[in-house]
Image (tube, rainbow, N blue to C red; front, top):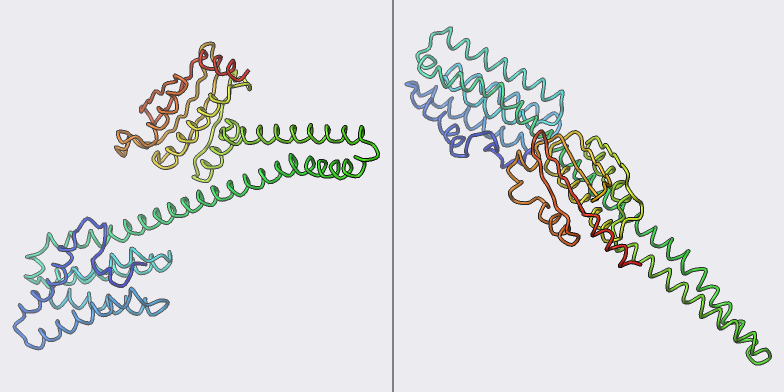
Length: 378
């Protein structure tokens, strides 16, 4: 529900000035009346309508429906006595923001039926005021029909988008926690036992150093060897942390796309498992960036990821069936494509973008670079 000060609706295609006109128009209609009693009655109805309209935004429960009922009665009175139809648009806006499905349907039907009935009575009475503003009355009735449906649909979409964003953030937090736990386990398994062994051998060497120097020397050599092994394992673990494992990024992409309700298809053909760390890191980061773009911009329902290994190059293809950056005009601004290109520059790779029937990113890394990376590691 909107805040109480949102008297002027947002995103309805009309500016606040147009709604201000709707607020001032009823005074024009009632002051045309020749009867002082009708004029005073009209002023009271207007003040009462806007008072209850404001209160309906800050009230909860059954009092909301009482306020709307009063507003509908006032709207009918303004239509019949002063040929003023536009209060029904205020009601249509308010009803469109009701979250309860049952409440929305009931109030939508009541407002529509009462408005159409009151207007029909006005035309049956052959009132000159109704005949003069027939086009505006027709537009108002169309607004009463469409405005609540449009607002209700928009609010549901925004609610789903917020839930999706919260889900993505939750997944990110869980992945961070999982990674921390993995690091803690690796550190425990890597260093825990070896440090314990170093401590035990140090105590033993200290006890026997005087009566058995040779054995103590062997224990010190074992301590030195164990310490070097621990250091080597720590360096290997840190090296693994610095690089994005391609298989881990594929799993991560699957989780992100499923959370976004996008069907994930993965195909891997003739792919070697001994990719150089640099190439694997670049492919992993490019895949992460591409999938992030699919979730944020594509509005797709399906995403295909293909990884293949040809004679001359490693190929990664990310394809979706949405509109994405192309449909929204965001492709020209980059959307992470610049970051992908910068990463590919390190390995002389290149990126191709196809926007026919969705968006397809094709990433190619030459084999010559991969072979050079292997030699460097050796």
